[in-house]
Length: 87
Length: 553
Image 1 (tube, rainbow over the protein chains, first blue to last red):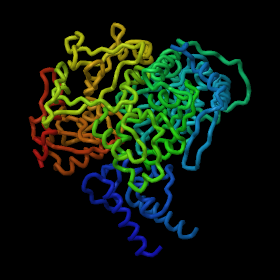
Image 2: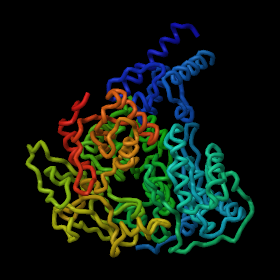
Image 3: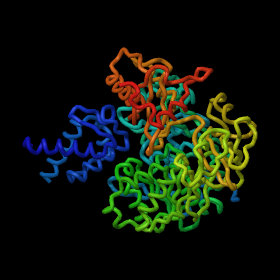
Image 4: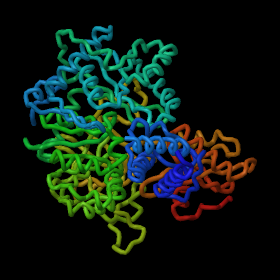
């Protein structure tokens, strides 16, 4: 995937995280959603729903619970966006 | 009152209705009649007995899937094996703590078997080496035996299941639920003073089955009344709260219960464009219980969903606890929630919940949880042990056929709450014109999204960190929705900023709980009582009044 598309996904993910968080946060790729950004389990699933809407993808619940860092979220979304492009 | 039924009787009666459970998942929905559930449960029963488990043995259930959970729980009860339902881990990050806590529960219950999903089975097998009681680890598929046995018919005073409470690190307690208490509670809830269940009722629930409201209220409630119930996974609701309302619309549901936070999630997260296509006009019992009920939440929900047919008279605020099977009191049907506006003093023990002046900034709104169920008794006990008068705040105590026999193999904890035939709930409340208003927790539990945390567990784990003064940590819940707050006195050996990060990380890793706030305060801010206990209430009050923030940078 081109760098431009990849950084678009990264900034899209960070926008979603900032919108869902109820307090000001500065997420980086290495931030842990729970330990660093303070998301509770409800907010993690809210992030999943918002990502689905933002990128027109479908993230199964089983995958959602294994994701911990922003980098993992970006990689996951990137893979699903690529899959969508090929279908 | 109808004759009380055992789970086996309820299954027989339910099998003749033709209706059953509809299990909704991301991949679609499948319906299983109560007759089919009964057949699957009997196969599990055969498998359990064939494996060498005997009547009275405890089998712990850690199963997320609703169909597997229900058939296994009912199957165990039909085999005479005592199913114990445990809280599953909240996240994968939570696994080490989950196995630690669960190991102590299994040991205390002397459980001989764990029935769980294949993902957790290896974890439990490795626990087995340290716990000689734990002989068997099964998945529900292991137990799917086609053979037939002579069914064992439980009697009313046999244990139907053990309901474990709380996901906190303090030892969860196993509430003994007998067939008699189960039937007594369900019948009273369904009766004319409660839901007044009708032949055309339809239930929808996303509530977890390891919790009393999901298991007894919605799932077994459907079976006992022979009415259809649609069950969806809790994560599906939390991911998209509108899915709950869509299910109510699709199945034309009349009864659905949820804790306050679920109504709040719908207010905050259901988007205006998602209102299209919803029809909540069939929903006649919108039950609310299991955690403090916020009048503003109910009001906002009714406001937002009025245009898709929701009526505030559908709300049915209720009070209960697992130690009383499920419900102890329910509000008045087809009446908008009764709200009492009282002075903030009502939050403390042995005070009068005097009505507040309409302009009182410190006044609080409390929602009536109605009258005690028929055949059950409720009283308010003042601090000196005497019966409290009208509007006098005290501990809520309960008596009647739904009160638990005790905590399983835990006479000490049982004796703390069961005294002279009364169940002391640890909750504060008052009665006004015959209706119960719940003010808070004597035990100061922190309730976040339906999960309960004991303040002293959080405090203890934070105290272990270098840079924190021992015995100078306070944890409590604050805000709406509630978030956990830690207030601590640092020793000064660790920079404040990094100490705050460490505190967040510790609590997140050990409890799966993100903190809403961490406040480091100067030495001496956190007072102690003469008996050496931290003055949690005083610290909490200062925090809420904004007197603590930034005391140490």
